[in-house]
Image (cartoon, rainbow, N blue to C red):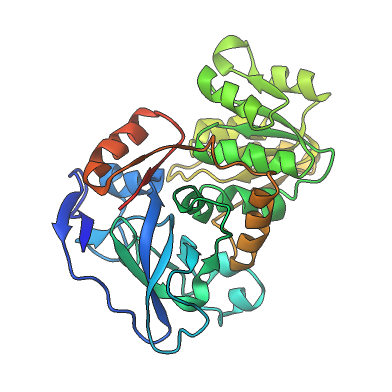
Length: 340
């Protein structure tokens, strides 16, 4: 099969012919219809973040496709079934899995990190991890549910605990932030989107943001948001991964508010402990999504509460994957999907 190989940082992905995986007992071979290009992959390629499986490695963790072959004991699936592959795969047995927190699994496996991923024509995964995709959702759009939608959904519902009527700020309107806006709006919140890119702010309004703030157009973002929300927000989401924007999001909270950090950063962050204590603020991190949340998300997509069309900016062939990654680097579009 054809695949795009990661051979190490600061190098383009290499197209190569590699053996097609043979599904083992309990596994399913999936023919990849689409796999989203994600900034996580740029961490490996551009920034030298190490993968658990050393290169050469097939990246790609946001995939959907059709069942192409069945390993022994995979009777729950049939040839041609339309499936979504969760970005991270849990063991189902450890303490965290038994608590329903599969995203914190002690034996967590991530496609395109711990094992070969889906920038390829085929990928083999355990049948127990697959999620059926309704016929009305195109697979080249459904693939983004695996991460770009599921991560914000988990953050909004379980870590930010957004409720009907909450005032919510979303700092950063990239792929993750825009979907935080969708999910928070679906939960009944009134959302203020914060970003320096006016095109992204326009899309934020399309996806449900009631108000937008461009830091370059106001003297102080915190004052602007407080004016729009009668004193601050109940929940602020940081979706960039920068100490400066984490500190900014923290400053948007009203008394009793909650900061949810989704963006990844290696750098330390300085927050006021006095403000944290005196205003009874909360800080929560958010990672990925639990296995049981995918059917909930698919129901919201089918109901039109979460939209995929504005999120998927277009598709690129496997042979054009490095061009697609360049678009991601330049901030063009929202989510580009490789269609092997």
